[in-house]
Image (cartoon, rainbow, N blue to C red; front, side):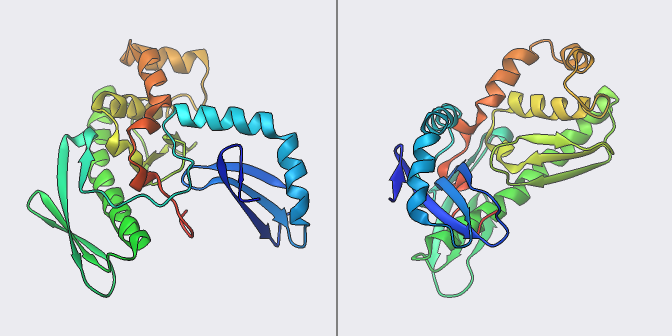
Length: 243
């Protein structure tokens, strides 16, 4: 079996697995993790039992714009950073060696073996994560000072689904995918996490604080929950070995 419920299927053995784990992974499809030595032929019965959940989750993720096809996308001809109102055309130079991304005015030059599409995508993802931090840090600082909601630190990386989080010590983590969101959704995301420095929960007091600073927060939160539709396939792609 190579697919199930219209999704590519991957079955992996894990030496520390003690039970069967079924998950839907953006960029990969349906992934089943089994203990070492488990009969792969029994996976079909497990999937049949979980079909309703799998189909419901598949449809919910698709509505959020998350790609579950498992296919390796083509490298982009331009990078559209909607949050920063910047667009960078991309030029490619085929050459051996490590793939690199170099800014050249408003254009980007990607040097490397063009036949190695995964390496090209990873290089562009790494470049984008750096750009996302350069964009998010000053924006978060400005909003933090304006609202008198201080935070302890900023961590930014590429995550599968969660847009952000805030630790008990006030360290905020953000998803680099925010660079593809409309600016108003970025500001809502930053506000959402800054308010967690006061209330580390989603209590009525927390939402009252959010609404005090942004009366339109309910609409924006709903749009943010579907923000995956703004993220291009090449950045959402995970591939083998990706976090």
